[in-house]
Amino acid sequence: MTSTFLGMPVYAPKGVGGLRGDEPFPDAARTALANAQLRRNLGHATRTIRGKRAAVVGEVPDWEQLRLAGEAVKAATMARLPELLVQLEERVTARGATVHWARDAAEANAIVLDLVRAAGADEVVKVKSMATQEMGLNEALAEGGVTAWETDLAELIVQLGDDRPSHILVPAIHRNRTEIRDIFRRTMPDAGDLSDEPRELAMAARAYLREKFLTARVAVSGANFAVAETGTLAVVESEGNGRMCLTLPQTLITVMGIEKVVPTWTDLEVFLQLLPRSSTGERMNPYTSLWTGVTPGDGPQDVHLVLVDNGRTAVLSDPAGRAALHCIRCSACLNVCPVYERTGGHAYGSVYPGPIGAVLSPQLTGVADNASLPYASSLCGACFDACPVRIDIPTMLVHLRARHVEQRATRAVPSPEAVAMAAMSWVMARPARFRGAERLMRLGRLLGRRDDRITTLPPPLSAWTAARDLPRPPGQTFREWWRTRPSSSSAAPASPPEATGD
Ligand code: SF4
Image (cartoon, rainbow, N blue to C red; front, side, top):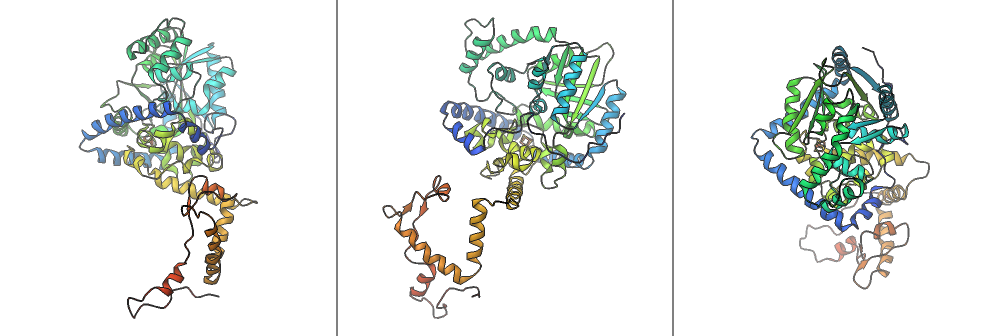
């Protein structure tokens, strides 16, 4: 066992991995909204998953108690994370595996590449893993001359289509089956005149991947959970590709965010009930693989666990934001989010889209690097209702918006919004100033005469009218109206109440 000090909390580094997009959310969302096919695909897929989830969740009489238990276990785990991680390392090491610690994505990528090279391999098979997407592992391996083959069907579609995942659980949710058929025909040598029947598509992918499973000497996986008391790692999946990767190759490298640890098997039991119903809408996922270190003569004999921070300790250091680390990546919040349903995942820029992405990504990178994401929400609260571990995403979004505003307030050049707010504050601090501003507002009556609405204003006010109209200012202020109105009671004051001032 090594005693490791991970250092002071730092954000995920720039230039590596998939946590930062190329453009702010509103710009990317505008492009996505113009794609009618994308909206149709997303609407159909999210509606289907929502329906399945609602049906199986409705069957569980103590669902709310399970959610409360999940929330409590996660909160207790975060409160003693360092101790649990050291316990996990002890137990994993005692069972013949090797634990590596990575401060960030660059370190984790380098560790995995070294291990693959040490195994003498130039290709690896992969189980679907958000952590490795976050790190940009495939790209880092490719730069090092190693080919990574995604074996989850949806990940394979994304990889062969030279595309980006757009959903945590269903990475190719933005594709319909005709598009998938075209990708397979283009990229699979034996695809022939493949139809768009789901079974035929699945069989084509199966045949394509079979050779990879049988020849790969190294597999890379993520982990849904790691049980500290025994050092057991867990992967839940639906297709069996994970089971093949976890058992056939000689070397198994598991890459896991440090927040995935749970204290005991009893705690794991809670999440194995919550996760499948919330994610795929199933009572139990078809494959749950559990392994503890090395079993002599059975399965991989060279087993590694890479524990990755990459901004997580920075998230942990914020008491109001740390619940984002409770996420079990079920994606239920994505499927109920009206914003996600219309824009899809690419608009979020990060590999973590939807409501959880809007709170997790800015915390991992620092709010300044994903400043538009906390605003990518209507704050309707559907995500909180759906979340199996009761993460209060709406409150966290407001918290991150406040952090963003506070950060901007310290800039040498204030933003137009900050200038406008300071001006408003000055005007509203004194009744006389407010009265003067009301009189000035009357000039606005020169605009919008046709239909009583102002639809265009010059910059910087055009930022407002680009998305909304303004009502034309009334001819009479409230105070003027108050003075002239017929008095209904002799007790009514002659003028509206007013703060004292100059
Ligand atoms: S925030 Fe909750 S609902 Fe969303 S992916 Fe995470 S666990 Fe699932």
